[in-house]
Length: 330
Image (cartoon, rainbow, N blue to C red; front, side, top):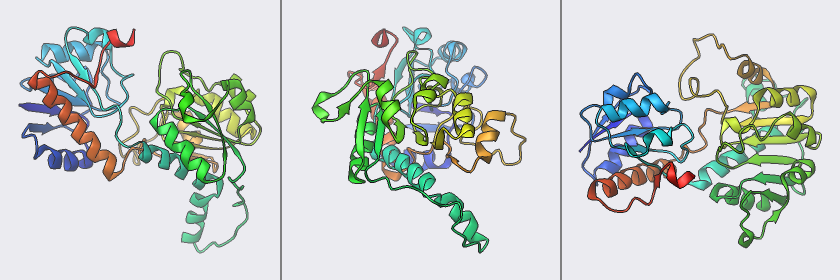
């Protein structure tokens, strides 16, 4: 069986080649992102494999189907970039619902710690033999209140980490899991009471721009904000204004709503046309990473194993436990 992989990086090849020794697929790696123009590349293959920022809208799905693709394996958890309605009855869509919740939760805490204690600024200073401490004052996390939006596996891991720091945890989830013993409160209360707010939820049509101007107005002055979920959960312009006004003490972002053509690529020689992103990057109290929260050896191993196991199940005619479909979402 031939698999056409889109949007691949060296680390994808390393971990998929290692895992594929157990499966025996012929994997053809392409650096190009999957989009309406590149879908034709998959012709002659038995399956396509794509990633979180690929453009898998209506035209791409149509073109994949015309190329003979009947199964699309996503090597990620998110699927908001796929037109599932168009795919219905044409292409089966599989995903990796979980890989390492610890990877993302630990990265979120890394962003928070770095921002709070100005470690990124201290690193740059000391490289120039500047050992001044001016402007590097942080705050104790112990005793502070953290608001966690989304209490799936990643949110649960982040809650445990925060509890280990002696923080009080508030939680919001439209589907609260009362067995976790967390203090669930309405979102408005969480925004108002939290010293730190961290997002750990999927992007849906209902929570698009859930953090907007109104939400930021409701936050406690001096709040720290972390997002390792999806960029479009946050209205970027509103977040920028919150930072400029001082309402938000600092923001750690592993995602950005307009990241698709920017993240995962070396744009260092390009003139960045995104004014909002450019302004974020010059602020000393903003730390941006390139959607790398998942990037640990354990997570990459699990992603490769689950992706290829999903395809094993499809080709063997077994039940597809990790299938996502338009019908299942409506």
